[in-house]
Image (cartoon, rainbow, N blue to C red; front, side, top):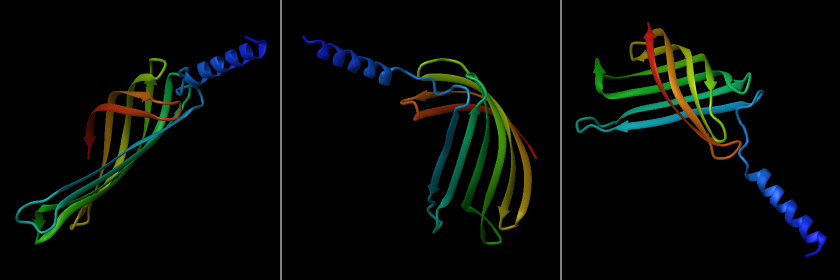
Length: 165
């Protein structure tokens, strides 16, 4: 084996090691963008139109250090109910909320469990009455981020919350 083949082999092994080695996407100065999207529709035998619910929940977090992240999340919800009417009109709601959160991460490699806390300030308008209700939700939760690559992962979180109207 010539010296060139040895150098090329070592270079390929080193490049593969760097590419395949887990990196830390929760480092200081990093951002994490996440969110949820849900849609549901229910049909009832006696109703010509289904009940529909749509929810969108984007969030962004900034890492102050390797363990601490602060974030901001939005929440939009639209619901239309087929089975509940007021004066013959279908009912529903539109809701928009925004709120801060904080997370503490632990773990390494690709799996990062965390503890979370935060709140959402939400305004909800009920249809057809146009009644508006403001509320504050406080939550605490546990979750984890699992990164498939440095830039792509999945997030799972379980919350306990209370809402003040």
